[in-house]
Length: 184
Ligand SMILES: [Zn+2]
Image (cartoon, rainbow, N blue to C red; front, side, top):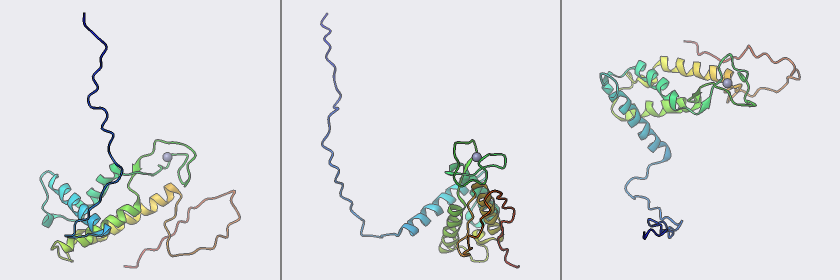
């Protein structure tokens, strides 16, 4: 009978959390953003090798593992890369959603490889065997850059300043996306 409507609130009011958090920086080693990112990348890659079956030792690692790693990372990507059949293919500013996959942006992969290449040598790897410096990686990154530039309608050009001298907007067929291959 004595069922009163008393509700117990399990300590709901602990509202004394101040917004002021004291950030204490460890005086031991103050790593730059680049350095800490590089260390994280290195650990991630090491973990990736360990998770392979059978696990791959860093000394056995070659460029194929690196390429697999880069493709593996695409599932965590946040950059929409339109496929050939998508109506937004080649449009830098899509007007609506589509079902094209998210991938790692070329710039992210390029920077990642740079950090891992440095980390490899800092961790005792030889310059000659550095898998991140492999020509195959360069080729792969170049292909990613080219395909993403087309798919997203964003040319990745830093240096060349082209005069915008194209009044013909009615017909924009950019079949000639040029980039230079180093003569090897
Ligand atoms: Zn799309």
